[in-house]
Length: 168
Image (cartoon, rainbow, N blue to C red; front, side, top):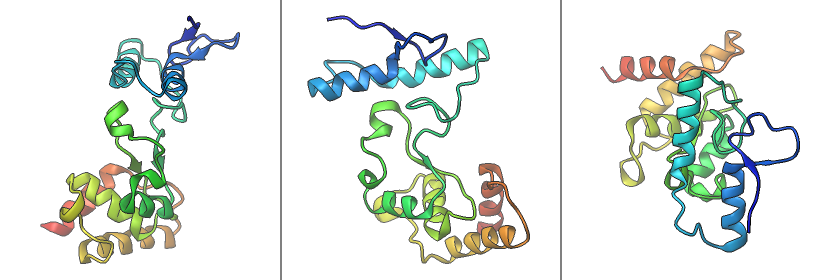
């Protein structure tokens, strides 16, 4: 009937589960959210981060910057075909956190296509396929970056700049 939790695991050292994890464990056990608005989890995390300057570790489940982010092209390809292949629940609906892809040397053309379609906010019939010439040009640029020795991910700002350059 009751459980002790912490917010984002902050200050925890005795085994209390982060509240955001307990919410989904509860839903899993009960089969219902019982009216809970789970998008508030994201709002709480943003509030704590903005008001306290606390850096949430990127790999933190549900609230970290790298939660539901992939760098692997095979995962991006799976998400384009059926989001449940990579995401076990609808993170956009439940947390207001759509799946993301970070472009690296392992992202492949599928990762680039996923990034471009998310950037353009196009889904379904409006999505650009992996075979689209724009996707291919961006992918070729990404490949060239790594062929010339790049070892870091390509930032969203760099991708946005390349996208705008190619469509103008």
